[in-house]
Each structure stands twice: as structure tokens, then as C-alpha cells.
Amino acid sequence: MLLLDGNQLSSVIRKEILAKVIQFCQNDIRPPHLAAVIVGDNPASQAYVRNKMRACEEVGFASSLIKKAIGTTQTELLDVIAKLNEDNQLDGYIVQLPLPRHIDEHAINLAINPSKDVDGFHPNNFGKMALGFKTFQPATPMGIMMMLDRYKIETEGKHCVVLGRSNIVGTPIALLMSKKTKPGNATVTIAHSRTANLKEICQSADILIAALGIPKFVKGDMVKDGVVVIDVGINKMEDPNSSKGYRLVGDVDFDEVSKKASAITPVPGGVGPMTITALLENTWSAYSKLF
Ligand code: NDP
Image 1: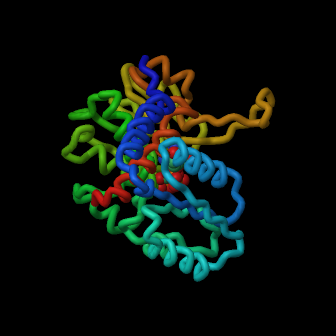
Image 2 (image 1 turned 90 degrees about the vertical axis):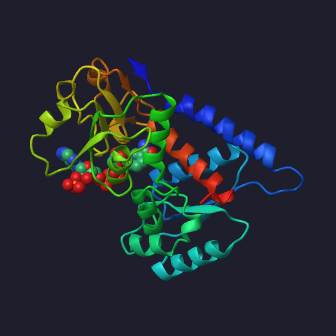
Image 3 (image 1 turned 90 degrees about the horizontal axis):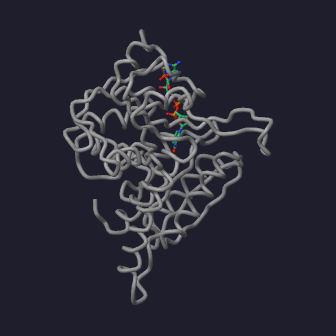
């Protein structure tokens, strides 16, 4: 069984990005600059943003964190976005999700300048991705594709089952896997909470991508021998033996499924770090005006 190690692969790719920054940013040329906007004090969001800022340091990027109080209005947030759109010292930015309920996520997404949309959520970029144009792709699916590519996992002609159809993971990864690309060229089934015969569908998967948000949902008897498993889930599970009182687990029961899989991502240390690495790649592309 091959462990698809997102930490190790990220470290390799981040060194490549750092090398490009060192080579390009000589003679007072400023480095790429990524900003993150966070509204409220959700601890998980704060941890994600912290990791993204740390990753910027690792690759020589400048980073800015814009913290707004939970009571920030939609108009105030749109003002922040308008300023970021105009800032010519800034290449890309993300608005960390989820946003408080009183703010309309779609309105915020639409306000982001597509050329700075390094999360790839703006409809312009999502549409370009769907049509096969080069563009910013949402970081998690992009990170998964980078992982399949670097680990040389064969996807062509394989049956790929995607569990989940969210706009940030399930739908875009299903789209990318079905494209006439390498990796890609898979025959894709998207499953969701209304899918009938889910177990049988999972059992027919050559590649199973789990993005449901249900701890250890995929069990050993739901997969066939030799399956490639990409576990996107990040779930907290109570664990009195851990100093924090919990540990992170994926949507896949790793102990059971890894016995049958030919390759599998761990949680943590699989898709999570690759997501941040993809964000860094997108920021480099924004800086280099690649799209
Ligand atoms: P969402 O809650 O937006 O979507 C979950 C999807 O799973 C929905 O499409 C839902 O179906 C489907 N689903 C729920 N229950 C079932 C079920 N019993 N059987 C089949 N399908 C089901 O989640 P996200 O896509 O945002 O995130 C999924 C997981 O990935 C979470 O654990 C999240 O923390 C993690 N994540 C990890 C990232 C990383 O970097 N590693 C990045 C982003 C997310 P329906 O549409 O019918 O409701």
C-alpha cells in the first residue's frame, strides 16, 4: 500500500516555488503577496488561515491577514474587498469560509476581482475551469490533481466515485477528473446524500474521493481491493488520550480501508497540506499574470 503523503509532497513543491521566488525576485522586485480575510473568531478558520500565512513564509511570499469582527456587515466586507481589488501590491487574496450567516457568500464571491481570486470560487474562474481554460482552480481539487499527477496514479479509464457535491470540493473534483486531461479521463460518478445503493457504487470505484464531512464513513466492506482512496474529510473526534481532547479523522476509516487500498491519503497529512500548496501555486500564477 502506497501512502500518499501530502506533507512530504508539499514540502517538495514548496521548495520549487521558493526557488522560483528567489530566482525571480532579485534587484528589489517584490515577492508575491497573498492576503487572507477572516470574519469572526471560528477557531478552525483561524487555524486554517494561520497555516496559510505560515506557508507563505515558507515559500518567500509576503502575506497579510485582515481580521474583521463577527458583527462586520456585508457592506463593510464589500468595502474591504473593493480595497483589496485595487491594491496593486497584492496579487491574490482569499476570504476564509464559512462567513457569518448574515453575509451572503455568493455576493462576496462575485465581488472578488477574478484575477486575484486564488481560491478559484468566482464564477468566471469556475466557468473557465469547466470549459477547460487555464485558470485558478479551487485549491482542494487542484491539490488532489497535483497529488495524483506527482504520484503518477493512473486515472484514465478508471471509475472514479466522488462522495459529496459541494461547490468547493465534490463538484469541481468530479469535473476535473472527467476532463480530457492527465490526470483526468476518468469515468466519474458523483454521489450525495440522496444517492441510492451507495455501498455498491463505492464498491465499483477504482478511485474513491471522499468529501462528506462524516467521520470514518467509508468502511472496509465498501471498497474493492486495490482501490485508490483520497480522503478529503477533516473531522474532530473525541479522544481522551489526546492533550487537546480530540483528534482529527477523515471521512474514511483508515485502519479498515488501508488494508484493501493500493494507495491512500492519511488524515491529517494528506489533502490538507496539498490544498495550501495549491493556493500557493495559484498565488504564484496570479503574480506571474499567467491567466
Ligand atoms: P459540505 O458539507 O459542503 O458537503 C458535503 C457533501 O456530502 C454534500 O454534497 C452532501 O450531500 C454529501 N453527503 C452528506 N452526507 C452524505 C451521505 N450520508 N452519503 C452521501 N453523501 C453525503 O462539505 P465540504 O465539501 O465543504 O467538505 C467535506 C469535508 O471535507 C469536510 O470534512 C471538510 O472539513 C473537508 N474539507 C477539507 C479540506 C482540506 O483541505 N482537506 C478543504 C475543504 C473541506 P447533499 O449535497 O445531498 O447534502
